[in-house]
Length: 67
Image 1 (cartoon, rainbow, N blue to C red):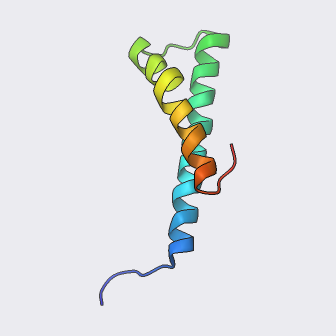
Image 2: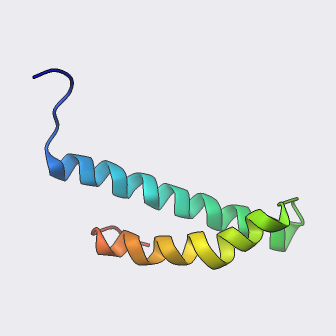
């Protein structure tokens, strides 16, 4: 066997942590745009508001994370 082997629980924890961080990033990016006028491409805003954020808010708790 080659490479790094880690327990499934550790791998799941890493994945959930990344998803949680990305959700926080997207929410902050949208907040900065809406409240402070920071530029955000209209397509990115739509994707964040209507696809990515809602999807992450469903999938993170499913895998045991917190939103």
